[in-house]
Image 1 (cartoon, helix red, strand yellow):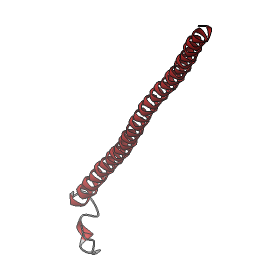
Image 2 (cartoon, one colour):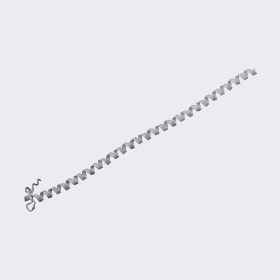
Image 3 (cartoon, helix red, strand yellow):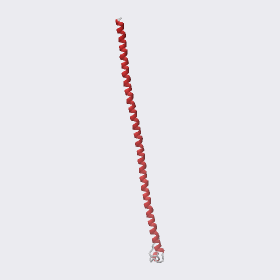
Image 4 (cartoon, one colour):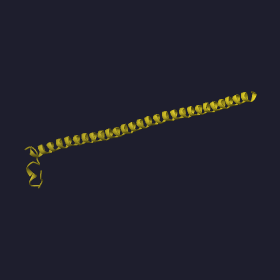
Amino acid sequence: MKSVLLEVDSRRHDAFIETNRRHDALIETNRRHDVLIETNRRHDALIETNRRHDALIETNRRHDALIETNRRHDALIETNRRRKTLSILFDYVFNLYTTQSCPLAKPITQHNHVL
């Protein structure tokens, strides 16, 4: 009878040890699962960081394009200013040569000047 009880106790002990081993394995699985969740969270954070980086690159590209547009606009303003100045000078010179009071108006053809 005593050996039967020892046999039962031994089986219960072995079952308890197996249950404890499985419990430890589940704890390890849960720990690995938590590590994977954290890794996934960091991966998602890196994806968001990369998206923001790409958005900053696009913003910088647009900024550079606006700077170039502004440079061209300034060049057009300068060109327009020069055209106005040349137009005023041309009108002034034209009026000088076409006015009867201008001493150079009469001898233009004599000096072979071409307007």
